[in-house]
Image 1 (cartoon, rainbow, N blue to C red):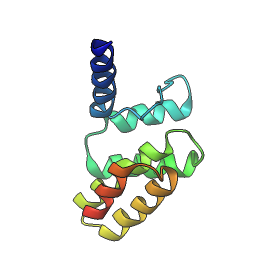
Image 2: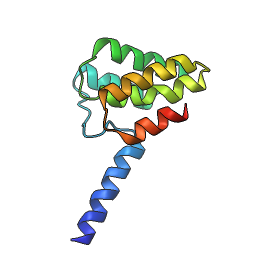
Image 3: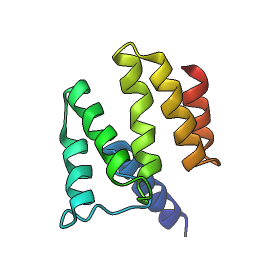
Image 4: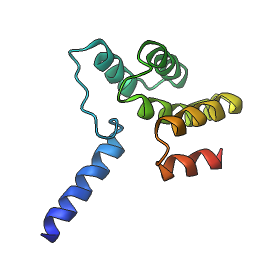
Length: 109
């Protein structure tokens, strides 16, 4: 039983570390899934933000929207745009109000 708990925890941590939206499997056969995959692979901060903003506009009700908003604050901070970082925090917390880690990350901004 204990090894099952450890395995479940390891799986949860690995998906969080890999950056996949929590509780969501990316279906790369859909336009939204393709965009999420592109976001995950993008290394340029400015281009990644542009893709995230595009996702928010095109798929505001998508089940991965909280993950998308969660990617934005730290990138806006890197781009020296704290107002946009805080705005993304507000939307992130609205999409996932019980996420204590999100609230803590946003408080640090």
